Length: 199
Image (cartoon, rainbow, N blue to C red; front, side, top):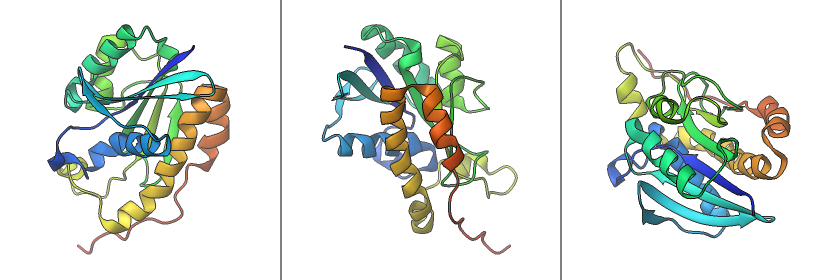
């Protein structure tokens, strides 16, 4: 049976649950709910297992904190002997508008600390799904932004992208990265954006 490791990046703990930086966690929570599976607290992360048309999926929410995400990814790849091309990492992305997404087969970390640590440990040759969180923050406030919570309006814009991300995971497992990129990257546009606050 082919195995896949689907990783949603974030920080553990209730105080981080609604953070923009935890968008990867949110996608995996939605996928687990749709798959009727639950997470268990295991080494380096919360892990849920499910299957999809003869493929076995391991869903991983690292509990190493964002900057050490690579420890969890490397451990579970090795433990389950999963090919790196069967790894999909889901991550928040400042450079994309809220509610949009971009699937890539490989690439740089784009300044993301979680991807940066994964890159240190396993390199850049693995698929990743970047989920847009927007960047309407003032100079010097990037950390406050990513560790801030989504507003109710933002959640409404984000939800369709999360729903689509669940479809993308299934397509990645069943059809592969190239077909999935061709099918979904064209669709990665949010219908509306939140209003910027008055200066």
